[in-house]
Image 1 (tube, rainbow, N blue to C red):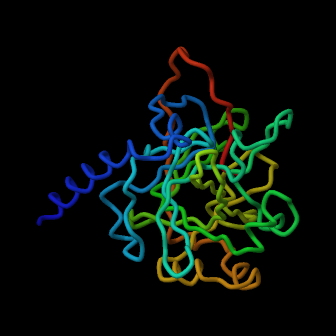
Image 2 (cartoon, rainbow, N blue to C red; image 1 turned 30 degrees about the vertical axis):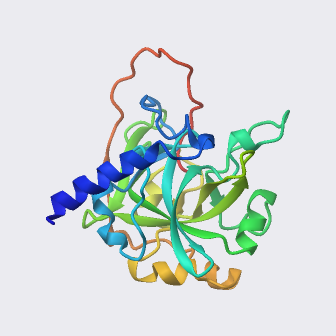
Length: 267
């Protein structure tokens, strides 16, 4: 079977299985409208590029390429007892639909390294070593280098054009039908002194970056047994191994559906 045949077969299988996803994922993973404003988002790995993640099974569910908070599912890799699992999960550790009534909505797409053992949203998953990897092709950040009052979307990826994996935490939820759903957050660190990542975010604001896990350390990350071990992974990625370029959104069109909350960046 040729690589193209394998890819076509995989896509057909994924589409066939998509309808079998639990209903609590329905309405989030097939959103087709483009968000026209700068939002918390990233581009997940293409269906046919999972050979770079040979340690894990490719996803057998449908997902959008550009992922935004709450409204989309995306693949994550995590440890499940004695094996690694590839699961659909929503982007935000505490999904809006799981927040208590009358609670002011808050965002959990990112977890600062200095908040992991402090903030209630993150303490449990962090201390339980619920670590995951988020396969990614690009992540997006706002640049203010052209105009300090107006951001321009840039995309950041690997210098060799390959996919990358971002360190994260996962959380599971028991659903009313007896099923189980997943959510995740990305881990971030200070990037004030990083030659590339310090170029993003508003002038004067703290600069931050997601944590990129080196390919040869995927298994080591997912099998960390203590917060001390996991903390050793929370580092900035070498600048020379990264690539960034402007990637502005298309011009806005008149909205024909309810707006999605704007977010200025990943962090």
